Image: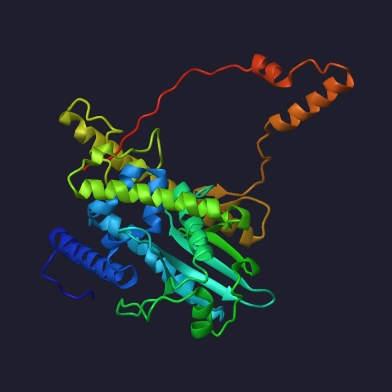
Length: 398
């Protein structure tokens, strides 16, 4: 028999209290982890912040100035990224690959130093000296291409490691969050911590950055990201210029300036709906207040979530039935009570390869001496525009 309880098995009040305890624990853990691995973030400019500044200056400056919300979904999203980082580090450690975790690179510049914290830095010297920076990103679904901010972050880390190679700019932090000694050059850090000898000349080292995007079901890598020696000076200059502009905006807001004076990203961006500072962003005019439609919007949002859940469940069950049919070894229908099912192969959709057609027409026209006919204009003449449509955008602002 199940254990006796005086409460209903679905005690909503106590369940919410449990979730709130979990939320508070995540928030406290995030604060401690930030202090241990990233130090006092208000005293320096981080590479992730500078990367976001390249995408939306207003969002980056607002995040620097104001604390992020501590609701459970937001905390879980952030925490999942750290769980992934730990898992990747443990997997590489199990293979015996020499690596640094949370390598700190400090570049002194003005009142607010520029600092990068690299998730993982792999180092080896055979068959040739090489360094790989891995930036771990947690995503709900794997993107077809990386976000601009993520690319800017890994490029910035690569630029800083190259520039500071022989400078006393590198250190690691102890579990208590304290720097483990004074900053030293990267080759010296590799000798003392990993027993690996790297050249003093960074140009003799194969240096690359990589993005590793992880979802709960799959993973994808993007790269390599590398700065050629001929472009390193210009890249560093751009990095410092953006950092100086970021500092200028932050210091202006801290001394009474308005956040509204900071430029914001133009046009639609997929991260705008989840931005912590979108509620009062000038990009979204306040418009007419009509609160009577909120129940309708909430109902529509709930139905969409149910649809996503249903579609996921449907796919899982279809995959299960396909596997059952394949394992049965039959080519006939499988009878199951009042139903029957089977898996059959269907031809893939046929699509016109416009690029190939373009090339074929150019060759045919050239062979016929009709080079004066513009294939692009011919295509445009034959195109037919469909009926205009519309799209409904719904973003939560509070």
